[in-house]
Amino acid sequence: MTTSGLDQIRLQIMWNRLIAVVEEQAQTLLRTAFSPIVREAGDLSAGVFDLQGRMLAQAVTGTPGHVNSMAESVKHFIAHFPPATMEEGDIYITNDPWKGTGHTNDFVVTTPVFRKGRLVALFSCTSHLMDIGGIGFGPDATDVYMEGLFIPMLKLAERGKMNDTLMAMIRANTRLPVDTVGDVYSLAACNDVGARRLLEMMDEFEIDEIDALGNFICDSSRKAVLAEIARLPKGTWTNRMTTDGYDTPIDLVATLTVSDGGIHVDYTGTSPTSPKGINVPIAYTTAYTVFGLGCVVAAQIPNNAGSLGPLTVSAPRDCILNAQPPAPVLSRHVIGQMLPDVVFGCLRQAIPERVPAEGTSCLWNLNVRGPVPGGEGKYGFSMVVTSNGGTGARPDKDGLSATAYPSGVRGTPVEIAESMLPVIFWKKELREDSGGAGRTRGGLGQDIEIESAAGLPFELLAAFDRIDHPPRGRDGGKDGTAGYLGLASGRKLKGKGFQFVPPGDRLVVRTPGGAGIGPAAQRERERVARDLRDGLVSPQTATREYGWRDDAAE
Image (tube, rainbow, N blue to C red):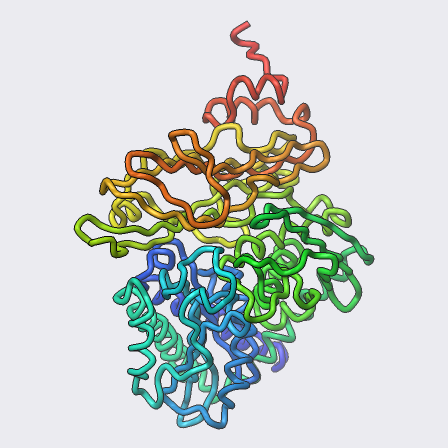
């Protein structure tokens, strides 16, 4: 074997080790975070970067909205804190939506790593903090200043000493000071663990820098993605999706072009910026667009700066997918998480055999807060209970039920929610018949009912979609069932905005189901029988949509 071959094997081993390092980094954040949306649902990201700001490896644990936007945020840190000025023990922080991950509830923390007095790498991580003041985690703000504490590019620590002034500001601007301060320390600890493991790796492999490894990772990944793109038909395709919006529907229009040099998605024709907080900064738009592309085109290639390079995105300034400050952006996930399905609509015109139908797409987060008995009206709790709908049918398989795609955020366990909130979950089960019928069926949504356990009203900061515009079926498959939000007493609630659940009544949440692919009459009989047995499809739907007949009964 040639020396170059041995070198490549050595580099590949170090690459795999680097992925293990950042996964341990992420697990540290998962295990030490105070916020349940991080600890229980995995709403975080972690990665290692070279001195150019290139993401070399990301943890498997985490969400694409965090990971792929964090991939750009480190470049902003480097621009603000040039490497020549970085010192051992420094830690940097921001929650600037346009230089971070798209809204102020996500803190990004970046830590430089030194070996023998020389800067060798940077670790960065992100997590969602439950409360940072302001109007609260909902879409009702009319500018970013109403959405809570805004931290520009600052030093969280300087030469090992924490910035006590900044920590006091953070503590004073949240309804949950213990959780919020604890999460900041958790983010810092996460990077510290990654840094220690990287230095151990460098000692083991006897290397003093990671530049050569970074070049190998980025070059190999870029070539692999370009090789996959070369197998695609070349051309341009356009797709349009309409979502509920806040007060008026939103049109998301994508034009996708596949060329020898890569894939470009342009969002010209998309609706303008909204007056409410469902706007999306371009970093978050890019993050979910390239994630959707990667899932179809480069699913087996590790995510890093090299694999992301051939996938590019543009959107007109001041459209809802390229909102400019000070636009409100706190609920940017409601629109941003639709984007993989939007680009899938383009790709299915070119490679239909590899692309699923539309799903719920956006998370159905139950953002609840309220007083506690004897609290004199003060907020005693504030928590995001994550819940999910169904994904779209796949060309050869059914969609996944109660699964968050594309975010990857897990649903909050009922036991955790009830232990931290004065509420009772009376129901949390799969929503029968919610998946769109088809040769392959859409995944099911959920039926959820919640009531206050304290005899007091609680607030719901609603930011839900797919109520007026459910997931669309394809090739003869049926649409998924629309979502629903209301009270057990019969009153329907709005999909977005502050709303109250009175004492003695129950909040009723029905998350959407994914859409189907192909005519339902073509569905295999064994699949229909299994769905009936498992209670996923009612006998009436089986008969009406699939032509089911129970031959044994006859």
